[in-house]
Image (cartoon, rainbow, N blue to C red; front, top):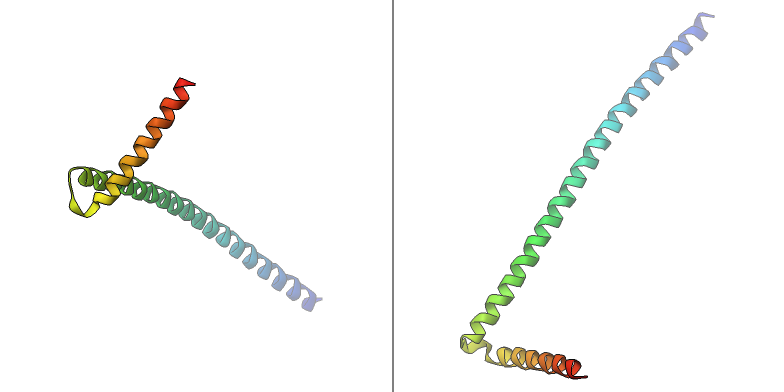
Length: 96
């Protein structure tokens, strides 16, 4: 009988340790999920900032080209032609 109680006590002890370890792992998992959510949010914010800066860069590049920058004359002409075509298209749609 003493042997059985020792086995039961040992099993209870092991179960208690496993339950404790499971609880610790749950807490760690929750912490990691929060960190992941925060990291994703930060990444999205940084991607938005990058997109904004890219748009500003393109606008500045276009403005410099329109001011007479010699390195972008072809690009400026193409952009102006595109704008003229868009305006012509709008006028055509309005006159229909």
